[in-house]
Amino acid sequence: MRDTTGGPLALTMGDPAGIGLDLSLTTWLGRRERATPPFLFIGDPTVLAARAAMLGHTVVIRETDCGDAISIFADALPVLPVRCSSPVIAGEPDSANAPAVTASIDTAVRLVMDGEASAVVTNPIAKAVLYEAGFRFPGHTEYLADLAERATGGRLLPVMMLAGPKLRAVPVTIHIPLKDVPAQLTADLIYRTCTITAADLRTRFGLDRPKLAIAGLNPHAGEGGALGVEDDDVIRPVVERLRAEGIDATGPLPADTMFHDRARATYDVAICMYHDQALIPAKALGFDDSVNVTLGLPFIRTSPDHGTAFSLAGKGTARDDSLLAALKLAAELSSNTAGVIV
Image (cartoon, rainbow, N blue to C red; front, side, top):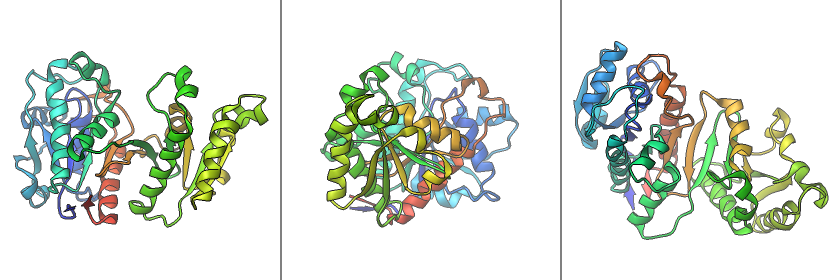
């Protein structure tokens, strides 16, 4: 077990042509009035300095490591160098820099697993750009799980949660076509997703007995089989098993009535059956300040819930609310768990 309570947050670079650099700069610039938790930026300091100049920001950038990042943070933006191999132009992604993007993620995970950093916070990546360079994972979440598995030797199920001030939502299936959802939606996957979510809400979010609202797959949760059998044949037995094991779970519930104000007041997290069933209400209720949290990992990982926004990079118009929320939530979760990784 490694105690990471005193370490900084490890903030990855993301795609250097996107808005991750812009947001990293503005969250640091607002560190005093907005109480930004201390972080160590893992990326190219030369590219970061160039983006600051483009945006008209005066930022002192200092190359360092985890050991000095917190003491430096008040006066300079601490950077652990990971160099880009190709020139970076804001708004113009280049697959030649994909190795630097993944190296930044690798480094952040290593620092947390070694007990030097308290949590991983990831800036947005462009999966299509990484695919051009041979990246073989569906997304950030799956790659982080692979890194954790290689470090621990165990098998993991990463669970994606969008956490905002009005809603926490978890999709059971994530980055797959909608037509493939029914076949992938097994009782085992739903059960494991729910138990991992409940466990992390207890140990990291401090909820003694989290309440899970479990959505149906079909309209009206299948309408007794008239609109689909998955709700009664697959989802309902899982809910009954969870309840028998002492987990406060209800469902399957019609998704179209789960997200209004009175309904949300009855549960702590919505377990949804596919990507858009979870992310549409999550983003509608908290587009600027929701946070992507990966549950089921042996370390804390958060991320803003938006993409690279190449069209905004270097223009000074990108909002940093979600990144700031991701940093603050990572710091809070780290404090809740006393920074201990098993």
